[in-house]
Length: 232
Figure 1 (cartoon, rainbow, N blue to C red):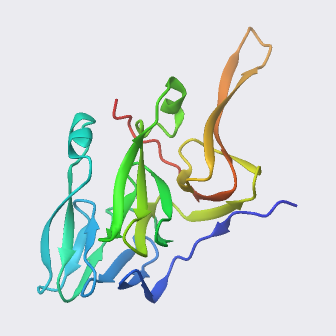
Figure 2: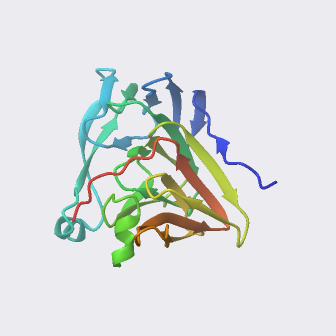
């Protein structure tokens, strides 16, 4: 029997990596707490829950500002630095998962599901072209890319429902509902598969659509798949 996707940890305590120590706690709407004393952390807008008053909040510019502006994407993210702890929470139920990146390692993330990252992680995006890409969860034509450019770092993601991870061997495939994928390694190929189903009854038919992922590498799956409105 093929191996099943494995549930990623829902609780993390005193984990240290990439210059920070962090905690993830909570069952329904989890909270990520990060000690930013040694390393700043940048994060998505509107997710700050609380912070020590010693922490300074500023703006961090992102690479490719002109390209981002032309694509209608944000050119700044919010950044926290200073001695102390800051906590984040998405305004909705789900699962916060940490992705540890070694120097030079990269992860591709479904748009709108980035939560926070350490300051040494490079954040860019990729425009996915072609009509079929509208079916990638209807979340627009962009995939966020995070790379451990100047050392080890962490990206935290928010998945809807629970998040499971499947590690694919070379050539191994898995089909996922278009709204169900959360992240993938760059080594994993993603394509849309459309099967036309027909009942033979008065010519009734429908399309059955999945995203097919081909290894080697990891794929993150969220159990509460969500179809975001397209940005186009």
